[in-house]
Length: 362
Image 1 (cartoon, rainbow, N blue to C red):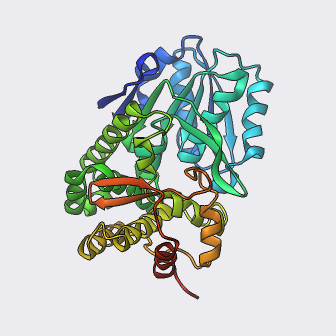
Image 2 (cartoon, rainbow, N blue to C red):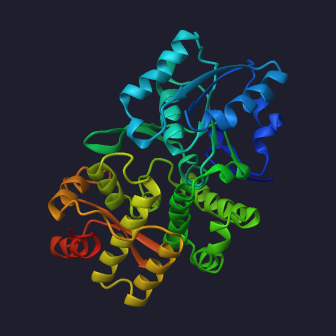
C-alpha cells in the first residue's frame, strides 16, 4: 500500500492505494468514531462489494445503512439524489453519520454532494471502484449532479475524510470502463508530466492487461499530480482548471448525446483530441505531437472522433460550460506535451475548423 496526502491544512486527508484495501478495517475505523455509517452504492457494485464491506465493519460493531441507487450517468440527477436523502432521513442519520461512497465517479459525486448538503454537512469517505474514480473524481472534493442543460452544473466543493483506492476492484471493470479511466490518466501526462506521458507510451499494453504493478504506478502518479494541483488551487481559481483538458468538448458530447450514451472517459478522450487539434491550429503543438497523442488514445481503445451532433449544437452546449467567463468560452489547450494553459483567445473560425475536422459526419 502507498499513501499520499492532499494538503489542505486542517482538511488534509490521505489517499490509500493498494490491493485488498476493502478488507482493511484499520483504514476506515478512525473515520467512524460513532460506529455508524451510510454506504451509498449502485445496483452494479452492490452485488460485488457491499455485503463484504458491511460484514467486515460489523465485526467491529459498526452499524451500516445501505443505500443502493440505479447505475449510470443518466441517473446522476436531482431525482436520484433525493433517494440518498430519503435513506438518510428514514434511518435518522445524524450529523456525525459519515456517508461512504462505494462505486465509480457518479456515486462519488452524488454521495459527496449529499454529504455537503445533508444537515448542512456530514463526513464523507470515498471508496472508488473504477479507474477513473481512483485517479480523478474521488480526489479533490468536486461533487455534484447533472442537469438536462449541462453536466456537473450543480454541485459543491466538499472534501472527503479519506480515499481508499483498492486496485483489486479494477478486476471487475468492463474493458470500456478501464479504457475510460485511462483517458484521465493520459490527461495528467499531457497537462503537466511529460515523463509520465512517455511512461504511458511504453506501458499502455500492461495497463490494458490489468497488470497490478503498472496500474498501481499509474494511479499513484495520477493522484500525486492531482493532489499537488488541488493543494495549490482547491476551488479552481487558477491551475486546477488545467485538469479540465478535453472536458469542455467532452461535456458537450455527453450532454448532446444523452447522459450515459458515452462514458465520461470516452467523451474526455475525444474532447482531448479536439483540444489538441485546436492547439495545433493556434500554432502551439506540431503535427507530429497531434499524431502522437492521437496514437496513444487509440492504443488505449478509445474513440478519437466526436459524435455527429453538428457544429452549432457543439457550440451551444460548450457555451454552458462552467469555465465560461463574461459570456466568453475558455479552453484548456496544450502549449506542448506536458504543458497546458487556459485561454479565452480562440478565434471562432479555428474552433469551427476543429469541430468540423474532429467529429464524425453522417
